[in-house]
Structure formats: C-alpha cells, structure tokens
Length: 191
Image 1 (cartoon, rainbow, N blue to C red):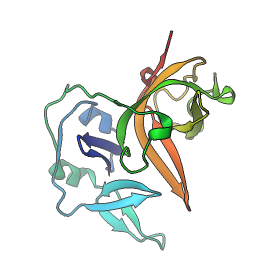
Image 2: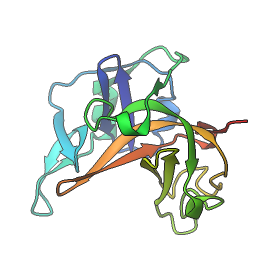
Image 3: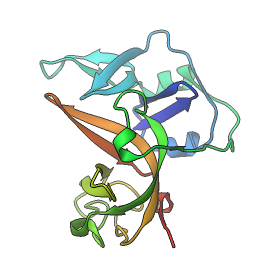
Image 4: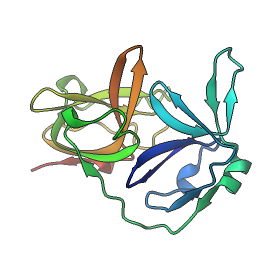
C-alpha cells in the first residue's frame, strides 16, 4: 500500500489505500503528484505523503490516500524509463539524504544465521528481517513483507550485489538502516 517516488533530489513514499499498486505503478513509471490537500508526515523517521491525519488511536499518524483520491492526485506518465541505483557503501548511508532512494550495495553477504533462510514468513504473512553485512562488519537490515511474492525464497550464501530502496526505522534515539528489495532479482551472486 506504498509507492516510492525518486528524483534527482531524493525520494519519498506515498501511502495509498490499494494493495495492487504494482499494476498501475511499475518500476520506471514517471509519476506526477498534485500535493495540494495531501499531508506530509513521518513514521518512525521515514518521511511519507498521505491522505489525512488519523487520531483514532489517540495519537497522530498519517492515513492512506484513498484509491479514489489517488486517481485524481497521482497521475501516471510514461513508463519503461530505466531506474538506476546509487552505489553507496553501508557505512556511508545517510538516514535522511538516502531515504526512499534506490541504492546498490556491492561486495556484501547475508549474515551466517540468515543464509538459506526465507526472506519472509509467508505461511503467517509475517515480515522478517535478514542482515546483510560488508567486509568491515557494517550491517543493514533487509526487511521483507510476508505478502511479497518472493518471500518464500531463501537468502543466498556468498558475495553479493544487493539492490533495494533504503528506508529507516527510528525507535527513540536509535536509527535502524533498512533495505526493501523489490524482488529476488535484487540480490545477485558475484563470481
């Protein structure tokens, strides 16, 4: 229920109340957003656009843009445009500058405990975290939803190139660097 938009200045997520967004917004589609009457917010450090401010649980949170409003506010343009990741070492990732940006990590591997483990808990539709590390011990969490079509595939062993959208999760003063891979092809074995 989220699409990530990126331009030369950075990236942002838009929360949309629709679970089939990949059909309308494939990777490489140009998108135009009419921001008037949308709301800018953050969820645990992650900047997002939404449709309203929700106070139903006693605290403020950003609500989804309804499907109807999304059709008026988020205009689909040309698609098939190549999207190139930015090569950034794990220790150089900036929690704000690189947020919601497609990145590439080179010469990394999954932590021993995560090798040959599924990306997500598909039977229970649960998200799981897998750790990717570089040769210097810097780490990033690969977080995958149990709804991901590739969630049951297993994290490979060995040296890898990993592509994904960089996100963060802030709890108190602790920032967790996260990577959302789009499909299993975002993890490439390096010979």
